[in-house]
Image (tube, rainbow, N blue to C red):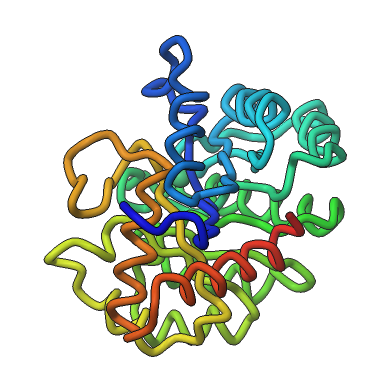
Length: 264
Ligand code: NI
C-alpha cells in the first residue's frame, strides 16, 4: 500500500491481547506493521479482567497504543466490589481510554437468565463509565432493541460507540440521536454486507469510526486470514469508495472522531 506518509488512521477496536498474538514478538511486529500502513494509534479492548490487564500492559509498553477495560457480554458474571475497584484503578491510568467492550450478545447466548445477567452487567458498567468519566465501547450482536432501550434509559451522560455496527438504518439513526458513534470493520468490505454500505453512505461522517476487531473478520482482500490493525486501512478505503471521497479525507475525519471520543 503506497502513500502511507500522509495517512493517519486509528484502529479504534482491536485485540492484540488475544491469544492469536501471544507468540514471541507478535504484538510488537503487528504494531510495527500498523505504523508502516499509517495506523499510528490503536485501542485494544478487554473482554475479561485478565484480557483487560493484558491490554493495559501492552498499552504501557508501546507508544500510540491504548486500552479499553471491561467485561464482554459473553463473559458476563456478577461483578464484585473488588472487580469494580480494579476497573476504577485501571481507569485512572492515562493509557486507559474507555470501558469496553461491554454490551449484549444474543447470537451466542440464547438462555434467558444469562441474557438478563448480560443486561445487568451492561447497565452496571455504563454506570461505572459515568462515574469514571470514560466513554464506552459497545458490543451489540442481535440485541439491537434491548441495547437501544438500555442506552435510552440508562445511558444518560455516557458517550460511546456501537462497535462493529450490524443493525438497521432506523436503529442507527436512534443511536446517532443519542450522540453515539458507529464503528465499522471487515464486514463492510464483504460481498454480503447487506445494509451496512447504505448506512455508511448516509450517516454523518463525523460519527463514524473505523476498526478491525482483529484477530477476527479480516477485511477483503485479507478475508479468511488473521486480522490485524494494519488492515483497518482496507476498511477506510471502502468507506472512501462508498462516500466518493479520498482515503486521506476518511482518515482525517475518522481519526479526528477517535481523538474526540477517546481523548487520545
Ligand atoms: Ni471486539
